[in-house]
Length: 210
Image (tube, rainbow, N blue to C red; front, side):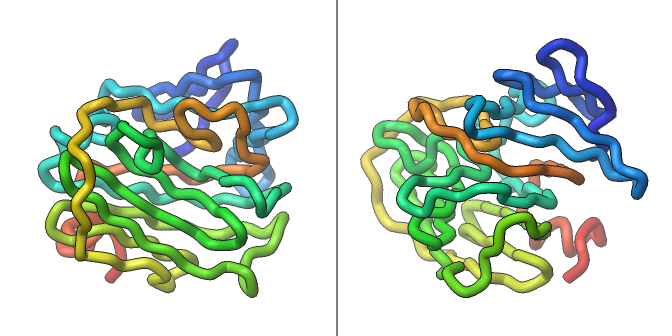
């Protein structure tokens, strides 16, 4: 998905529009990429719309799962704090949804739906570098569990779930932040795509490579 332009606090894309908080900036490069920059010192983050991709906010409507594909770069990192890539509150008590973040150089990805909780982690202490682009594919479904692919390598894949107290509270999907938190993430984002289907379904239909 190409970021086209920013009008006041709205990021315009071909598919739908995003709400920008605290004025993130859009850069248009000579290579055709448009890059959105989030400055954590200014508490900047992005809110995805619930129209068009409602399943990403409310997992009860996610019959086939979901997949995010994006290219990102961390420009600053406090390892002692949770550095969120995407979140709809999946790691927050009494909330359902998803959350993927870096904490103490561990990449942690979890999804909570009803009584089900999937979570996986990956040690990034020897691989994570600032100011370096990484390609992420983040997916979940009731059948396939959670998975994360970074630069073509699967680093998280967990199909088993553990029981969790049933919760129904849902939140918007945020980029660079989670619900209830004041801190945001310093990063750059480009080439963001979302599907209301798990990655294995997208591979079977030739949308993503196997």
